[in-house]
Length: 77
Image (cartoon, rainbow, N blue to C red; front, side, top):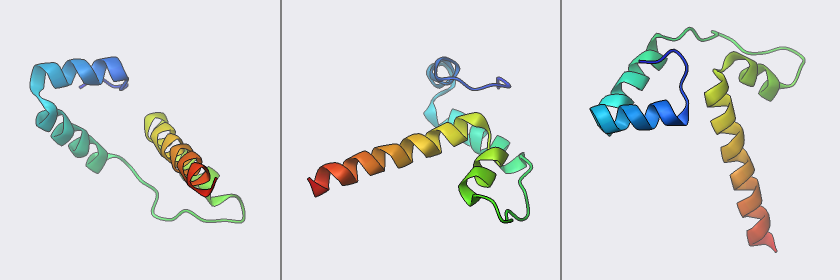
């Protein structure tokens, strides 16, 4: 598995190995990743959480939040 994930490398792996295999390997890597036992303090919780995440995961989280916000605003209008 590549050290850095990007959309091209993931697509290539899915073509070669299949979606299930790539998903299983990514989950296995995430399970082995170091994670903080506690996130707290007086600062912004979202900022602290994002600072502990891999950049790809943080980006996905922020994009999902942005998509939900846009969708919610569209429904309100």
